[in-house]
Every structure is written in C-alpha cells, then in structure tokens.
Image 1: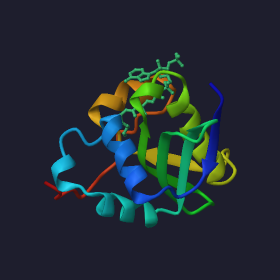
Image 2 (image 1 turned 180 degrees about the vertical axis):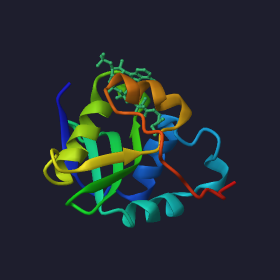
Image 3 (image 1 turned 60 degrees about the vertical axis):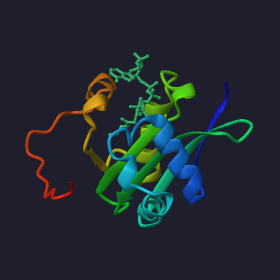
Image 4 (image 1 turned 90 degrees about the horizontal axis):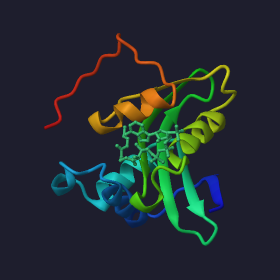
Amino acid sequence: MSIHYIRERPAHQEIFDLLVQSGLFANVTATLTPSIVGHAFDGSNLVTSARSQDGRLLGLCRALTDFSRHCFVATLAVHPSAKQQGIGKALLHFTHSQAGDPSKIVVFLHSSPDAVGFYEHIGLVREANCFSINNVS
Ligand SMILES: CC(C)(COP(=O)(O)OP(=O)(O)OC[C@H]1O[C@@H](n2cnc3c(N)ncnc32)[C@H](O)[C@@H]1OP(=O)(O)O)[C@@H](O)C(=O)NCCC(=O)NCCS
C-alpha cells in the first residue's frame, strides 16, 4: 500500500472519527466531542497525516513546536486497519522532519499506557525528569 505523509488540517469530524476508531479515546469518549478535539488540532501548529493513495485517512499526528529546538507531540494515532504497517513510526519521524532540522529539534511526548512498548520499540528514550500539572478527571 502506498502511503502519503503530508501536513494538513482535516475536518473536525474526520479527526474525531479516526481518533475514536484508533482506540485512543477508549476511556474518555463520553467527555470528548468533534468540536473539542477539533479545537485542540486548530490550536496546534503542526498537524500531519498519513493517507492512502485513494485519500483515506490512516494516521494523524498533532504537535506543538517552536520550529527551532522543541517539538511536543500531543497526539499520534493510526486507524486499526492500518496498524502494524510502519505508519505510526513513519508519521512520527515525518512530524519530526517537519518541525525543522531533526538534528536540532528534541521531540517530547507523553505516552498512553498501551503505547509505551511502541515508543520503546522504535527507539525513543524514556526520560525520568518529565513533570506535569494534571487536574483533568
Ligand atoms: C501506537 C500506534 C500509534 C502505533 O502505530 P502503528 O502504525 O501500529 O505502529 P508501527 O507499525 O509504526 O510500529 C513500528 C514498530 O513498533 C512495533 N509496535 C507497534 N505497536 C507496538 C506496541 N504496542 N508495543 C510494542 N511494539 C509495537 C511494531 O511491531 C513495529 O515493529 P517493527 O519495526 O520491528 O516491525 C497505534 O497502535 C495506535 O494508534 N494506537 C492507539 C492510539 C495510541 O495509543 N496512540 C499513542 C498515544 S501516546
């Protein structure tokens, strides 16, 4: 399957559908709507996607970057029909490349519990000194 990696801003509903189908919202779907999720994408300055040759949305990545030193990846998800084909890894690397010179930009992300093995497998470094303020229920 030929996959295209691009920078784009899909419609809110298309974003929401992909993220729900990916399983990312397994425990929080009830509190999230296409509008809330869409606004999170609107407020992110680097959004990338993976699409099939016939235009189907297969993967999404949402990041905030200064295009100079740091890139914070907030969302990465792949459609269930397209998992385990290298798309998640390729989309993360594509996002890194779009954030500037990859040799100068540090990528940070907070992993969901299910994705820890994925990030370890593709070679990301586990940091011991990340902190958060998280009052979200
Ligand atoms: C996590 C996710 C993005 C991975 O995407 P993917 O396209 O299926 O992953 P890839 O095919 O690029 O995997 C790359 C490698 O990691 C491995 N891998 C994939 N998921 C893995 C996991 N959960 N644990 C360990 N290894 C994993 C693959 O086997 C592959 O190995 P290989 O290069 O030796 O063949 C995808 O499973 C997903 O959308 N999950 C639900 C949403 C989610 O949790 N997102 C992360 C939020 S932080």
